Image 1: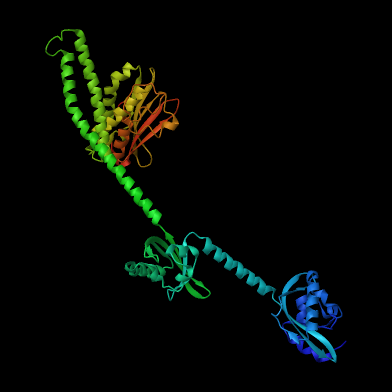
Image 2: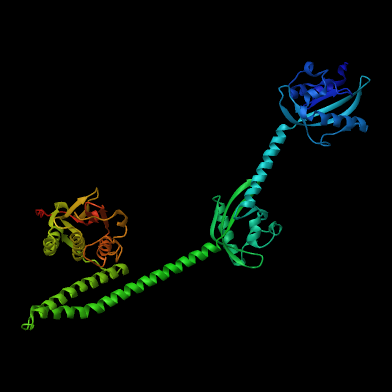
Length: 506
């Protein structure tokens, strides 16, 4: 059947046009339909309409066409039925919309279908739907309250369920409110000013904001917001986080810290006071026992009395040393220890400390060596504090080194900034690695149950650590479970003084 020019006017259309006879045989396709289906006129004309319909949709499509023919209607426009699918020559399927009408051309009845490929539009709609679902999922599942406001008018345009819960109202109640109405009256000016200033840099961060719930309750919140464009409209996206729990936790931590500091101050003050109270009578006990032990006013009547007097003196002296340690630790903890800094001759001080410890070193069958390099000999420090630190380290080294061992004292400059290092090393049993972090804690003498050395208070290293840190330095301990221990006092390089040329003592 030839229609001549009757259908030529459809050739200029962008939509595909397919004409069929009442039985569904294709009579005509325009160029747009050829491109849409990927087939030429010669391939399509004379074929049943099923060739451009996916196999799974053919039966439903036939029923639709037959219903139209039986209805007597002249046309059925796009949108009056659900979408259809088309099939290209390569077998691919695409989404389409179609209108259908009946006409007589050349004296014969034909059915005209105008088809539009909507696969690109459907894909974009699917993408937009997925984006909307993702956007909604984020809004609904975020634990923070989220509010969107028109940046120009300040009116709330969208909220999530958490926002309604935070403000104690429904989501609809929040829509249309001005953002300033979210806050207590007395805070509105401050927060509005903060928002204006932050918006100029493109981000709002207000960690100390407040909001007012519908029941009048004021709640502390942290607000983070950022302006953006949504649908061409400048929109402010704000995240409101209820920080009531965090503020309460901060308050509890502050109170706990202040209570701990007060307890520490009370303990330290008590120790300082009780130490002073104990030293006065103890000095009298030591003095009287020295007189008895030395028989200053004649024989004691029995040799044992003189021996007991000396025992009392030794015990009293030991107790006085403990009290002095406690007093020093108290001063360090209270920050009341004042350094009297002068130029210290480390060579002289090391020699003096070794001579002080000489009787105990000889009694334990040890060898003590010392070396002070010229560049480390002069040190700007508190002489008494340096001597006390050195004696504490020597006492520990001698205490934990078995007979036949060695104790070595070395003072030298190390590092690029000329730090002065004063080290005491021994060949004793060493310190277990897991105990290194604890040995500088006060009263740690019982921390190691395997330690069989003489007892002590465990204050020596704690005091030494405090004294070196008061000098701006640090205490370093290198200990192994076997092979001895090395403890280093590291003074800052600015405390070193140029050597005056004296020979070092060895």
